[in-house]
Amino acid sequence: MELERYRRNLPEISPAQQDVLAEKRVLIVGCGGLGGYIIEALARAGAGHLRLMDGDTFKESDLNRQLLASSMNLGRPKTLAARQRVLAVNSLVEVEESPYFLSVENAAEALAGCHLAIDALDNVPSRLLLAEACARAGLPMLHGAVGAWYGQAALLPPGSKLLERVYPAHCRGLESAEKMAMLAPVVMQVAALQASLALRFLLGDEQPAELLWHLDMERGSLEKISF
Image (cartoon, rainbow, N blue to C red; front, side, top):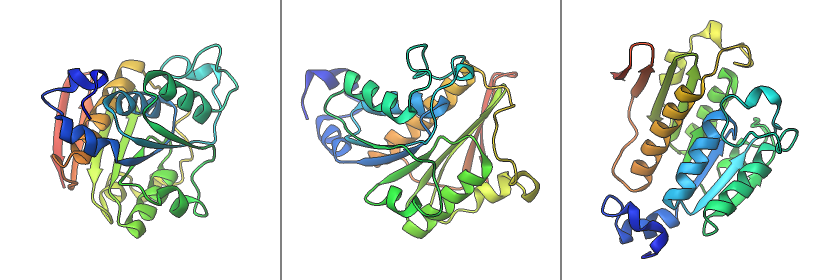
């Protein structure tokens, strides 16, 4: 796909690779902090099909960090705002809205036809649910999480148990990270890492592995931890 729109992707993404990327279908679960920046990056890069899943609406406490949160979007569905943003920055991208929270009942349908599932969620139970659904579907999952000055990301193969090790049993009843500090610069950096891993995977340059990227912005470090 040789378009002026993608000229500054060269030479890191060739025209042939751009065509490959245009055929990829990605599920992004969560269109808030991490999800908003991931959606932005993938749409601008030229990922051809984005399926956006989130049952939430924007509230005032989202304004400190979420790209799509604005005074005009307060009370509006996050998937609707995300779809409008994608169409505004790259009308070539096909966008599917799924304005629902991930559940056991809808997970398989959400994953159908996708090449990658991206975890931009804010709670442990939903992450583990997505991991289980990806295992059943034979689909890789790109995990991401943020808290205060810290964050993590991992491109996991289907059936990986890494998240079960990262989140011990006593953490799994936690329903939300709503009371935890969420700082915009850290959210942006973890989302950028996830989007980079997603693009490299979709282009065939990165393979899922039992690896966790850990970001510590108090120390200014990024470590890759092997499991």
